[in-house]
Picture 1 (cartoon, rainbow, N blue to C red):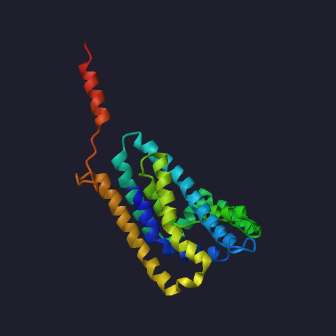
Picture 2 (picture 1 turned 120 degrees about the horizontal axis):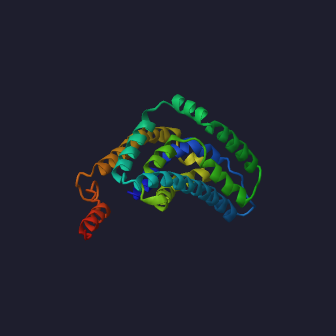
Picture 3 (picture 1 turned 180 degrees about the vertical axis):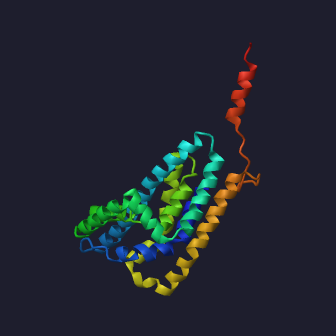
Length: 238
C-alpha cells in the first residue's frame, strides 16, 4: 500500500503543474553555469519532497495512535472515507474550515516567506522555496495525507508521502525547466482525471480495511497478540 503514494503522485502530477507550475517556472537562476541551473531545480523539488515527508510524519503519528488502539482496519476505512470527503467538499467550505482552524494565518506567513526567499539567489533559498511550496493549500496533497494515515507507523507514513513527492517529481522538474513543454489543454485534461484517481485510491483503502480475505488487496487481519495474551492467561495455574 505504501507504493500507492508513488502511483497517486505520478498519475496526479498534472494537477501539481496547474497549481505549482507558476512557482516552478519563476524560480531564480543561481550562478552562471548550466549545472547550477539544474542543481537549483533539483533542490527546489527536494524541498517539496522533504515537506511532504514531514507532513507524513504528522499523519503517521495520528494513524499510529489509532492503530495502537487495535483499529488497524478502521484506520484504513477512515482514510478512504476522508479521501472521498476531500473530493466532494466544495472549495469554499474548505476555505471556511481553514479560517476556523487558523491555518489561513499560517498561509499568509508562508506566502510572505516565499516572496522573501525568491529574492535570494542561492541553493539554500531554492530548497527553502520548495519546502514552503509544500505547505501551500492543495487538495491533492490533503488526499495523499489522508492515505498516509493508514500507513504502518510514522516511518511508513513518511515513506508514503516521500514516494508521493517522488511521483510528482518527473513532471514538476520538466516544468521547472520549461513550462511550455505541457500545453494548457493537456493539463486541463489530466486535472479532470485527478478526482477519479482519488476515488480509486479511496476504494482501495476501504476494501483493504474491510478484510475480505482477498490476498494482497484485502487480507483478513488476525489479532495474534490478543489471542496469545488470552491463551497465556488461560494457561496460568489457579
